[in-house]
Amino acid sequence: MLAQAVPGLLYAQQLTMLPNGLTLAKPGYDFAYLEDNVEGYRGMIAASEIPSWDRTGRPDPAEQAEDTRYAIETLLFKSRAPMHYVIGVASYGMSEGIPNWKRWYPDQQAQLMAVAWLPLSAYRTGLFNYMKGRFYSALPGMISNETQFDKIVWWAMAAQNVGDAAAARQLAGKLIAYKPIAAFYNVGLNGHACRVLADMIKK
Image (cartoon, rainbow, N blue to C red; front, side, top):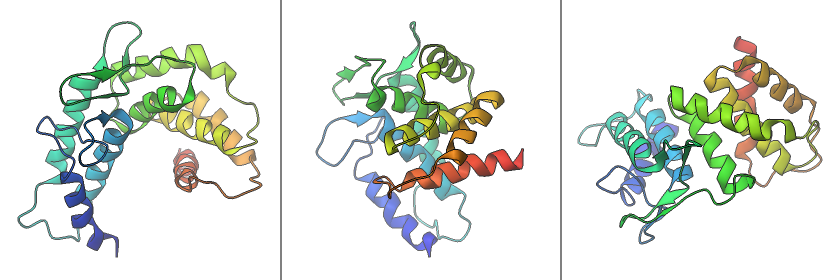
């Protein structure tokens, strides 16, 4: 049962949690990445919403999620134009910015992950619109491989979170039309795509 695994997963996360709320990539590796921390935030939010596991004597995952969200906003976000998140930061302050906006991973993908999975905000909407203005027209018309599928999924989730209904519908149509020829290396993409399409059905 999923609830039985939650305490162990949260304990594992504590092994990499810094006092400032960010989580390191792994124990002993002094770098906290945007992508990992957005995933950690979502995981803690999900854990807090499971009613059937015993929280007795354990840190509140909702409070920890808020600590991580605050750390992402204050330590990883840069408001100078163009507004963006840095890719990651070390505990001693060194950060890795965005050396190449045109590179999909980790540069664009990590930005879209933050837009898609963190709470809606004016500056995340602004970040999405900035990226849309620069890169949206270059997305593939039809999906033919996993990398393209990956791009469309994250663009679609980000579009849905900021309320860009027209882009979300267009991107969902590309996901529906895709006929995979092989299993994905990243099987989680299938789950993300299902959520995109389920949200479209609800609306």
